[in-house]
Image (cartoon, rainbow, N blue to C red; front, side):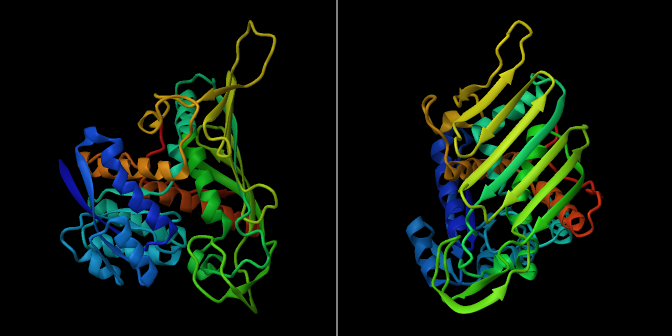
Length: 394
């Protein structure tokens, strides 16, 4: 049994998911012969340090530098706010630690490029939090695309529409500042859409044009600290929102397929309507995170006079479904997808093969995000720079 000492930096909602993900790998994937030992968590918030001990960490510290200096820690998760990703990732690289980082990897493409290139130069294994890739229907959709079952892929639609910021009285946080978050919903949600399009189609987005808007232009300052998108008490003082609430984009891929992309953080109605549709000359597929156990599939048949989708339930053989459920009818949760991500990260470390979504994938999404923001500003088509170290290619 190979034991890998891990540390988690920032133990809010996402840091806790990473911690639970590490802890479940040994149970779900016993044949890997690996155990993630929860050595330490770093967070300046006392309540999060207490949570670290409850999660099974041997110790909790306030300063991430203490965690990175620990020789017992081989790999780290970076779950801090966006504006700290660059600083912490470069420190982890300098300390020789493999790292699993949440997206967006930096507040701009330049920071993401520096992180990805530095990690590659140091020979370190990386992982990025593109967890929707790991939903079994998404894996099945990619298989149908890459096998040619859907024929020549003509176009795709990907949208992530949410309501987590729909209240105008929701508290102002770092997410609404350009200095600390960079872009708004483009980096937060549409980066998942870019990655899903590239992963499912097996090709990169090469150019984009877009429009954005900010529908809630100011928000009240909070009186406390929350976890994730949780509500906190707010003051009467308000501050201007500095980045976008909504984005719609058109994209061209290297394969010639056309893609439409859309994201909102202020939608009224959809709670987490995350959808991927792919259309080909011989069929199409559709998946929604609101009904995660189903992939809607149509395969054309010249002898069939009636057309319509078949709801294909996830089962063993569709991604990692069989690791979590004994048979069709159940689904994998958001949390389960982070377990798969933890497995891919640890297996990448064990084998030296980049199996997890990489820092290169995060860099690719960041370049597309930046081109989208630039296009929204000038109304033109923008090329998306080619990057290295990606895992979405066919």
